[in-house]
Length: 255
Length: 368
Image (cartoon, rainbow over all chains, first blue to last red; front, top):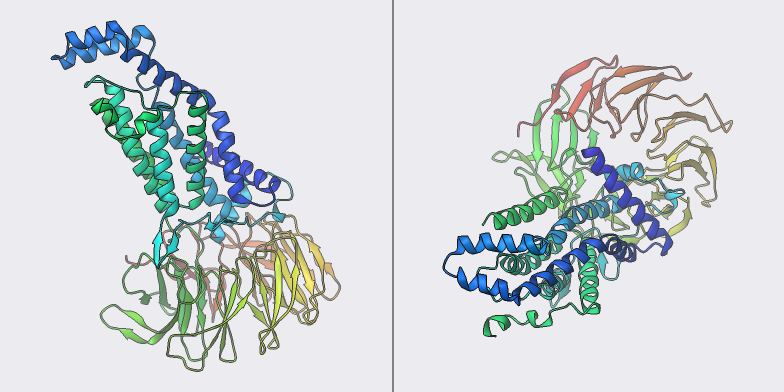
């Protein structure tokens, strides 16, 4: 298993270094382009996520479903059973909207390890890197330039403003993750709607979690998060599926 | 409820997995630094610098007295003429410490800090070079810091020479000039007195090892361009003298007019600097070679990543000398009749051998 994972990391490292070489030794740009590549590869997952969210939204206006909700309003167990039956009948996967996000975790972990391995901050890391690379003339490129804009991509980021170290990337990561999660959240008018509850939970925990990662880990990972989030937002907006009203807290409840 | 549980567990698992690969370099994650004086071995390995008695392998002191999450040590300690131990941290604290082994705190059993230099911006990998009461210390921030050791007590200010790239190797000197190698593929000569940069040459590959001065007055440098180059120290003019099969990581060892070095493919070379030719076909022990060879009388010891030490005669015959196991990246050190070896991936941190390869004392393992 460890060998398979190592191979997975090696593929990431080689692609990253290849892009780094092509774009003129800019590792930040390499991460951004690599993220775009990952978004293209994971396109079917994102499409499934959008399809799941759309199906969930359509279900909220379904008259049969509304009747079931009314009928079993006081019996939550029965309502849950009926909900699963309806999901099955209509071919809706209740995890369809959040599973693709969770599947990103292995990619995030692999990317993080790839960044750390590619930037090689210790002698042993640099030696390990030599075993990961199967590109020709790599000794011309090594060590990689880890500077991008104001960041050292191999280290956590902060900007000193009036003597305070402000984690600007962590804030941007949290905000863009929140926006993306909210835009894709299905509208729900049902108090017991578990999928909506799950999405609601995601929209709170994911920004906090990814913000924490951005605060703690190499800023190269933050560049991935931000790029991925922006691409996600643009993708939803372009397809007209972004639910902008969700961005305002409490909007649905008031309605 | 079950879905929420699965969701939370997945998030936590992701956090744990990501955290697991974010730890700083501690014991076992990169190779240790090892130096000796007459009585003691100084081992920089993870959270501590250990002073170990050469007589019996017992720990005499360690620094810091208690684990400090900001401090990580793997730079080889340097010893000044007045007996201070100089070692830099590779943790988030980028200080260079001067430890006084004659002033031990009885409560913590740690040496006092005679002084510390806090002006570096990044972590320390290279040991500093001591020349005529001056300390030439290179840092991963790409700077050469020159500290005056006359004072010996106060916190230091330094003359800063801005170079470039990560500087991981100990500078070399002929007394007149100081030669610095860099991971940005360059070798730089700095005037030891005026501190002016005299020349700066590119080798086409990173240089993680030091330059070495030959008997012929020339400078020899190995690089990740898989070559050893010869430099004219006065002008910086250089030419490749030998192509290796792969990266030359280590500092070549000189014995008279013979240069010994290994590569990460596990080839060991012997090159005659007078004739400009190899003495024999490369010897191939059992693994990659990153440590520098140790010339030991009539033979040479080479350590491999496979955890073995081979003894090679000067006519190119090799035999397995000892096998502590793990992976050996740090150059073995001779201290009197002892040969000290510090592998990674073994329970013990330091092994001591007699000249015939038999153990001298029980391998050193810290108690906590």
